[in-house]
Length: 271
Image 1 (cartoon, helix red, strand yellow):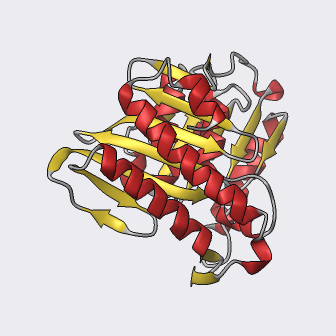
Image 2 (cartoon, one colour; image 1 turned 60 degrees about the vertical axis):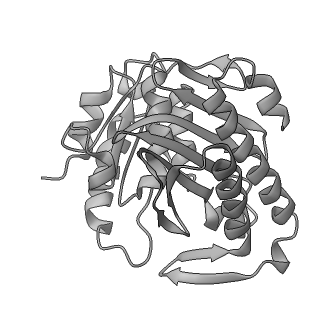
Image 3 (cartoon, one colour; image 1 turned 90 degrees about the horizontal axis):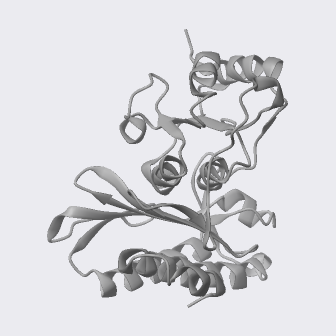
């Protein structure tokens, strides 16, 4: 068990301990590979979309750890795809390396993301930032935590004091112009906009009160599943752009504190 798991395990449920253990093991593997980036085997999945043997190794570790602990649960994984389980109520949603491009460029901003979907709803989530040893975790009805410390979303009310995060569409995406319109709207009224390239961590940072909000379109389930639980359990709001709870099916998310949610939603809504 890693240092973060040791700090949080006594307060988390048995389910969370399993998730924390899997994330910690995968994170340690990623840190070792991060120190040897020049020797990694990398392949291209699509425009500006890469996968490395580090991703695959981390995913294998998570798959084996979670399967051993909960052998009947199914999976939705970034690299392996859908793995059916006997237990149709529970499914792990896993991103073994969120922020792959950062990782491959030697930028120390990436994470492991593991969520549990129960009966179609996001029930528990763990996001681990291994370089800084920050373990974010949450379970429905139990609150959100960072290394054992309770998290709450930011209490800032004024947009001019608020910092927002987003993801910028890259090569191969068709929504560059709509995004620039969104960015212009938010830039005009806020203290700043950040783009760090790891959606799971953006959501975790909203839960921790580091950002007042985050928006992005074109995401996959594994990019945001764990973060949705974290933000909700930290007292925040998470919706799609239409103010509904269809983030996973629509591939889009707006996550904020309750005060700034409607304002940000109106700013990024595309006519």
